[in-house]
Length: 170
Length: 314
Image 1: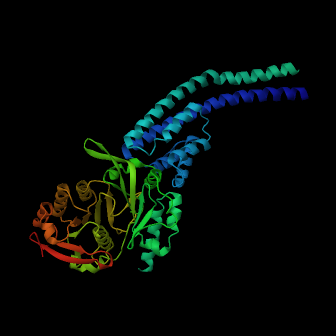
Image 2: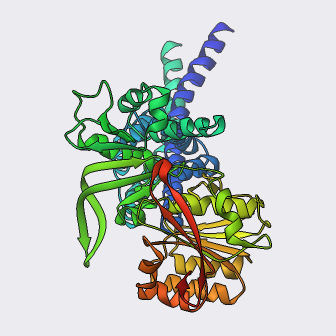
Image 3: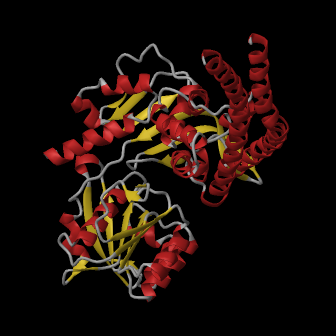
């Protein structure tokens, strides 16, 4: 009975690790999709309404689902520290504090964007947003391919590893 | 100053000081209450310590003598003032100033970026001047009688040299007419091109312009006057500093629709006004019935109401 329970736990644990890795791939795709959606909205707001950044952050915090919505809420809340820190730093801090689960490349794209937001005219900023969106869309495509290719593999590998360990220990 | 006015002055100073980076804000807030109330401008120059100017001239804020400002400090003031949204005020920056929350005006100096013969931005900031907004409710009371016939306001042009207090007086006349304070209450439309009259922020006037007042800010005056006329059915239309033929044409169109007009112009006397072709045409057309001449400054300031008849100031 104890052996059976150990076997189930071992298989389940290893399987969970595999499925966890697959879920991370899924999360990354979802985050990137939300980010591109948010940047597109920012572009539209800036080109038609020249919306101020605090208003933009409030809008996105309310309309974009977590974790990206949470990131913008963090940006909105940190605007009260403008006298102490520059927007660029506040944006970077919000990026670090938010659980976006992004890769190095995506982080770099967003950090570069933070250095441009609020500093140039509406047109300059919409161009920067469009560029960042295109780059993130490329990341999204790659992430989708990786998820489709590796998502099921990770789950299966986890389960297989669990079963293998059970066989070895038994 | 009565209690309400001193409290107002305290709040306005705090709002203006909040535009400074934290180290400078803390220094400004260490000024005594009395000194804070007297401050007319906060001046920041690259390479020099921050100063305040008031009735006793310009002096360095105590404790800041050994702290010369850097361009980064100046840029930070603009970042705070615009809430890190330079794109929302670029049109104003081209005119050399930005109006911010509370109606305070930040004058900007730097190197102009010129494109197609026009200044499109300023780079390498060299100095900033934060002018603390002034609101003097009640100053219109002493001249309202002269501006009305049977309690109804007549179209009025306010004249003074630059910095004479035209905008402050116009704002208080608007407030009085809009609230019915001493005159028959009327709906007022303000074409606030530079945002100095009502100082709109988040769609709310930061300075008291009365409760029956509609404000259209950020649009060229001529266009805004016509938009207000078409859309808001105003009984009174107000605009600060009439300077362009398009503004005059819009005022004329409004006058022909039976709307009472309130406006200001740079002029030191009635004769000065008549000598300028732009205004001569308005006077000849009989669009304005009264002129207010502002003379002197500070406590010496006087307001003189004149009747305008047949293109002449009487």
